[in-house]
Image (cartoon, rainbow over all chains, first blue to last red):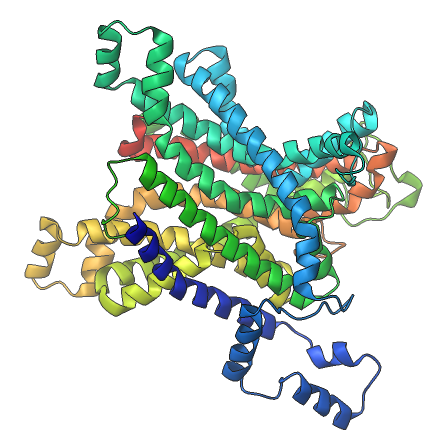
Length: 318
Length: 276
């Protein structure tokens, strides 16, 4: 097992390197001379040249990359062009809010998918099953910004049940914090719920038709025990992989959801920074999201291998 | 063909709806009741009525006409972006699978790197780097789509490369290009067609998101995502129709392609038929 994790970590290195090259390239092909942004009103060619030298922008690109990487590895991703705040600090300040929203959405998505998906598989072709299968296509087809707008219209503006957006600190106003969490969490959860629901239902249907369940019933086990102890246990293994893939989708969804609901997290920071041409912040968020996504994918694979003894750790990864 | 359609009514329904959407997009100048960019402030912010079935926006522009014209952007971005992803992805997959060796190793690590990014975030940063224009959004969405086609094609090539009919083709002296294009690729098309159909749905959704964030089509061009963003400022006055028109259009278009892709998968991919 340890060996498996180590090998996977080693495989991650070249990919992480390529990821950093992509992020660096995107920063450098961006139109506009960054020196002009730093310099403000300064237009004296000699002064601009000095600035360019100071920031290392007169060096060849590979050298610039190495310098950038050196700083990045030490956790220094530069400063925001707009606020002069260190980028890492700006992101870390907003990270807990994004994590709160993300975990709430993941919780909704997984728990509803498990319950409804199981019931739909057990009562195949029942009205509940038809609604659930319809939702699996509708849920992934609904743009989250449109869903968010509908929820705001109905529940915040027309019915006034929840506030239309914004953030309250959990430490000082816990009730307000949770009230403001409901609509964005549902918005963020919907697409991933549709995917998870489909997976839970289809892998459970797969397992339910297998021989060993007939054996379990034949030896006199109640239906409840058959489903809970035998079917779910095996049926949910493939579901774990799908849950893992949701992390990336949630990061994507958070960008839009936070923007609509004025949720001051990393996603909103990304959108604001794109609008304000604050490229160091954008690049840092992209880099950190990619790394977080890679690590979570690895974690899911490890979990998967641990859950399913049929998977050998020694098998060569494709 | 007719029998195929009868056995798969979902394909027929999905295909018909998509054909209708395409028709509306092509015939936009004839079906749209008004000029989508025509400003008419005396008729601003009107709720839906017989004269304006989806109402008007703050500049008095007809929402229905903007939705109809907006379908041109959404559908063409969907088709072209998937075209880019398909062409680049399939070529890369065929080459990587058939040549193997170092080329395969390097190509697949590059694909892994692309997959390491959350898809929308990558599309956003590529578009932001190239400049906020609809053409750049198209390229970005296409690039993001490449890995799925590469992996699918490569997997098929690897599993077919040593099969008898491929060996037979090679034995009678077919060139590698011919083997790949004439013998291996046709066997991968079913899975690719499914992926491409679902891919168009994803691409339309991505374009809408990019436009919503101001990185796609620029005003005053009618575009579903951008119009939702523009009109969202009137939500607090409960002027819902301006957002509901384009929002429902996105949902309908994406749903149709997902629905068709799903039906195609059940019909074309026998491995998945059981679980459906």
